[in-house]
Image 1: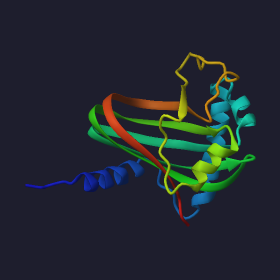
Image 2: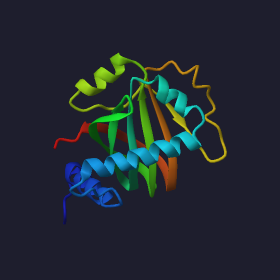
Image 3: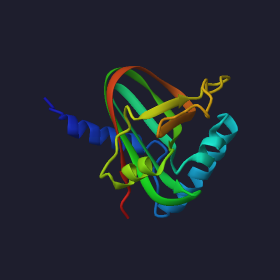
Image 4: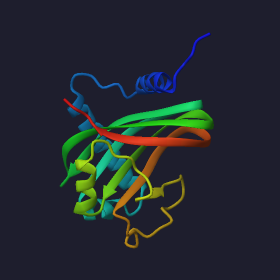
Length: 183
């Protein structure tokens, strides 16, 4: 009988998920920058009001491709860049573990807008940052608008999810962590 620990399972799931199109070779920074540029253009084209958010934000964390998979246990992984003044200043990864009723595979992009210097500084100075109750989520579904006026969003952190492909359904308990990529 093979006894899997949660830690071993999550490490294996993260490695498997990372192999689904997120593998980045030696030119890691250049590839992330290229993917971030494409993701931003897609967001500006698809998500009304996102350009206004970008103009007002103190910084943006852009995750161009996050791959999420689950069958009971699940995980997600992606890499992206923190932009300040439209220039990359650091690279980050996102890792997520989940458990519950779930099935599927999905890829999506998301951008986290830090709307003031304090929120940006809290993110940059943390050893690892978990998005939680301090963020306001905005989802873009095909054919729908954001459903909220970006001039009325007052949260210091706003996350926009877009460019979804695939299907992932379920109800889970999950944790998400953003970590700086060390070179």
